[in-house]
Amino acid sequence: MKIQVLGTGCAKCKQLTANAEKAVAELGLGVPVEKVEDVREIMKFRVLSTPALVVDGTVKSLGRVLTPEAIKDLLRV
Amino acid sequence: MKRVDPTPAATPTRRTGRTVLLLAAGLAAWIAAYVAILPVSRFMTFRVLGLGPASHLGESVAFFLYDTPKVLLLLALIVFFVGIVRSFFTAERTRAILAGKRESVGNVLAALLGVVTPFCSCSAVPLFLGFVEVGIPLGVTFSFLVSAPMVNEVALVLLFGLFGWKVAALYLATGLTIAIAAGCVLGRMKPERHVEPWVYESMRTKATFEGERLGFTGRVGKGVEAVRDVVGKVWPWVLAGIAVGAGIHGYAPEGLLASFMGKSAWWSVPAAVVIGVPMYSNAAGIIPVVEALLGKGAALGTVLAFMMSVIALSLPEIVILRKVLRPPLIAAFVGVVASGILLVGWLFNAVL
Image 1 (cartoon, rainbow over the protein chains, first blue to last red):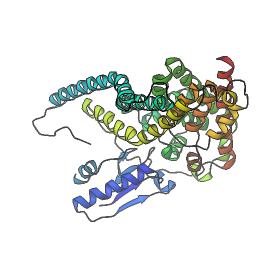
Image 2: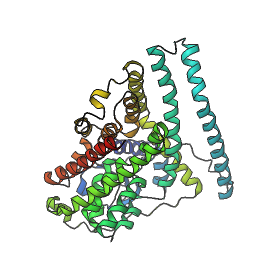
Image 3: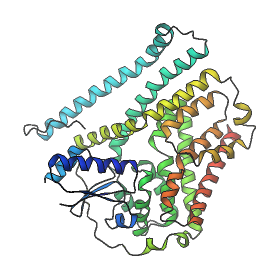
Image 4: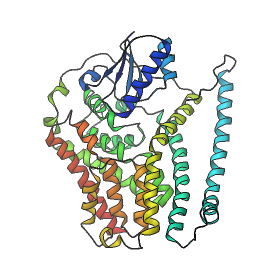
């Protein structure tokens, strides 16, 4: 499983990364949360708002800071 | 976020019913709290703390204890409803509406959509690129980028709550006008020359995000989320703003500011804009200061120009936009928007 957070480094993006890391740790997945901060890389996912959460190359959320609980729900499926 | 109990027994109708009940209870509590602010703040200041109504400290403390809960309550209520409204307007939908629109019409639509579309200046670049990609003219995109931060619900509500509907309406009308005009002017300047070349290199991959389906409860949840997000973030600003405002309210003599922020000083508007542009705050933090400044004789045009320049243009946003725009276009963007704000400031000072 590959988990990425897209964001240009604003406070919301950092918070989403932290929440994703928490969710991953609580589920015991043992995978890193990759931060994608380069605009060109971000644009490859064709998102209009950041932060975005990407799981296995699929954009799961846009422009929102999901709670660790909500991220866990996304990762379980 | 507290979840509505997801037991299998909770059918959609029952969940909706429960949400409506919770909503009604929340509103009732809100109204009760709002009505109680004035008597409670006076009781605290003059009875519990025993401050004299005429003393400087008494005035400052009364102002602080009254305005803080008032502003926070108004903010929570509006952010809640705006959160619900915004769950209907995503950046993606806005882009779909704007795609294929001519300039003029596009500028007006972009400015209007900027008011309701959720936007954070950290998303400015992805949004800019996404707009360019579907062929939305740059001028139209600029109208959106000006309107989105400047004319936002927090600014409007606070202006309405503290100064009445006339000032709020003036702010809305002039803010939209600046956004539309700035987009039109920038669109005429052949801005494409000054966009970083890589922007136009193809970025053809398939869009992968499927929209969320939200029911009534889901949208109310969005409202609650917005309140937690916005109020949770801006309350220290509001507090700081009101504290400064309270200090000015109690201690600055009447008319102190009239000499250098009043109508007669023509240079006060450009000075306010020059000071305001690099500053970065949000409407919630700046408005209580605005209120106090107005109360002490500063002219409305000067104060609004200050507020607009603080929230519409900021150094962090300029730094972010630099990734896609070359310096001449950045300079034109800042220059055109600042000029618009300047004109509005002078106009208000001359008319009111």
